[in-house]
Length: 399
Image (cartoon, rainbow, N blue to C red):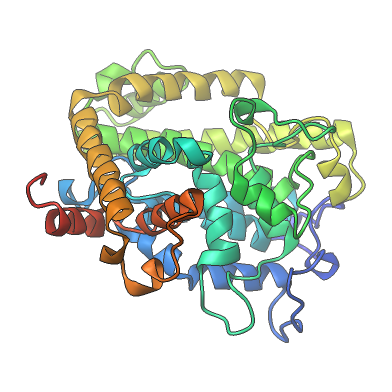
């Protein structure tokens, strides 16, 4: 099948006609591929709509022009499709993975995740990636024959492993899972449908992961400048970014700051995408995978930045960490957000009947882990706005 610019489907692209299928067998769609169907199910999911009012960095009441989880997701999806098209991969699978990648984030972004992780410290902690899997396999309840969205194996595998394997060949946790092990939600689902946690994800999942990095780097710079957490001159020493700003200023000497920001970020995104395409093509040529299975079995990622651009990515993230994520304005709001989440958790732990009936029903007081996870599931599904409203209603003295 041809793609834009004449690029044929690569032999290592995922093939929807050869999908490993769904946990609950369903007849195929007459009009959509298996992966296109996954995209559509994610878009229509309740959890996807809630991303509109979930924090990226700035809480909703700070302004309408900042990214939310939804707008970030759409930007990641656009970049993922562009990369998949250029590399001859399955665009629908790349899109499905990009659309789903942030479904598990609780209100207030990473601040909410830190709070829930602390609340669940005795029960394995909270991991937004595992929560995404839980949403699409259990918590979405739209279909009469099954819980979840019954997505294909390829989409579920990519959701879980887009950042790489979780265990080694012997099953021992690796990377960030060494300290506390693989999250229970992932282990629980893998016992029913093996997601092969020891292998790398397919090329489309790797595309979605690096598209997330590109979107973060570029658009958090944009939001940080808009919020005046730092200025254009502060970016002058950053590799590539400082050069691009200088190029735009020389080309358009009278350009106003807002247009300058848009133009250098547009060029930065283009530079990052072009680098990923060139480096990935080099890696695919060297590895010569003959099938999507060969990508899974590779000893490392095949979709990546070049070493030089990886350094640019690290420098950009380091700048954002210091000047944005740890900025006193952001820290103050996120500290308050963590308190809201922690206090809601504590309240529902004592008074579970204050949750909606479908969440409180059947909670076993003797099952401390199950009770804590159910409360975390409820809170994780909240938008920023709803969490703040519920906190003010249930804990007025603390608001």
